[in-house]
Image: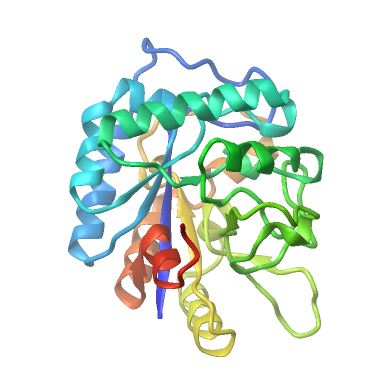
Length: 283
């Protein structure tokens, strides 16, 4: 079974733990190109095609990098423009953000952008209105709802695998949901995150591979992985964060690439667009 690897293509300073933590600026030294190049090398080495959810600001600053990603056979999708939390935006602000990002990306790659991922999984119960706007603006799938919850994001009752909007009371919408994958153990109803970000860096590599195999074989579903460019960069600049947020943001960075290589070597992957096309879920 083919699984999905995704990259939230943003820079080292994009984080939403608190308000006004960062400012998008051309004056800030960027590390995104070097880190994306390393991902492209690894994906080529292991014959992996991935989906890159690209921040509009990053695309504006690095258009040739976006072209390079697409020319290497990977899917370009939207991560919004400014990396703002959806539930802290008004509907009009959100619409402007996603329209700007989508148009910018499509102009660079000359192809329709089908997918969207909210910064920090910030489509929650407070911002389900965003689903209507996404469909109105031409998105066919979203990977924006985390099927568990913490202080920043998540909807605990969200399905763990690819699903429609009916579960959120949006029976009129056709947009498809592609959530990050969690693992259910025994009678625990809420899944355990393991497939990306701090969870990926925390969970041992052998266990990630074991759970991936179990989900593929026993639950007959693909695993949706996600990482950020900075997560394989041990020499990145550091954001000044409180202790808890610093642990979430930086724990396990040193061993992340090694763990990533193990996953890439033991798992087959395709893009979200390819998987949804094969399942006849796209228009």
